[in-house]
Image 1 (cartoon, rainbow, N blue to C red):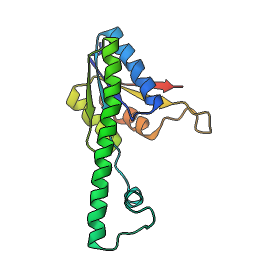
Image 2 (cartoon, rainbow, N blue to C red):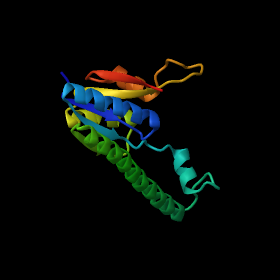
Image 3 (spheres, rainbow, N blue to C red):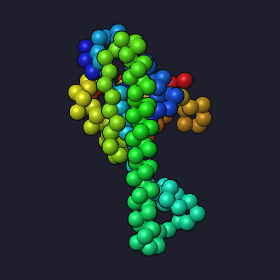
Length: 162
């Protein structure tokens, strides 16, 4: 049936619950898993907030250089954090006897990174987390999950997290 299940995560508890369910499914059907995280692109306001929370503008070429260096630090930290997320989950897969590989994608749109990881890894199923919501939007998928379900070229299984 399925040979390689892509398990996207952003490191949240809900995503990790879905990843663990994906590992159980993989073990049941004899598939391997690819655990992936995609650092999201930062918008201009997040960049400015990271660079100078006290100012909302960049005024000199020296400011531009400092902003670039700050963003490089943020990107490096996100990559380290992403590797930490996927490594912890790979350890769980190893303990469960499920063959797993990990990927930390370059910064891009999250859904683009998930599609790229699916293609590059040869995944034949994407298992996405959908966190339950008791509020007004209960039952509505998150925007990334919705885009994956709508545009994927392979089957997508949505796992409702507690």
